Image 1 (cartoon, rainbow, N blue to C red):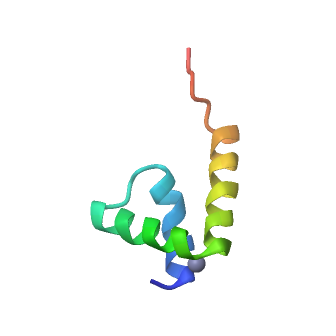
Image 2: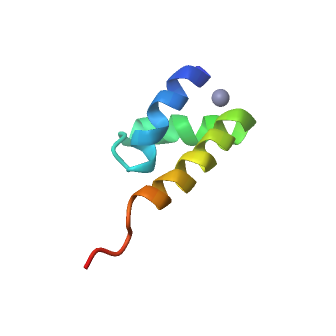
Length: 56
Ligand SMILES: [Zn+2]
């Protein structure tokens, strides 16, 4: 898969909205692509800041 597609799917992947097949492709790509892996880490960091895990 192209980096463009991976980066496009990452937000959905983080929210676990992607299909099982997509997950496999994304994980495979992240293991081989450092720039997408970095984007992934940045997105998870941002997601954690924006989305409160504990809601009263
Ligand atoms: Zn990539």
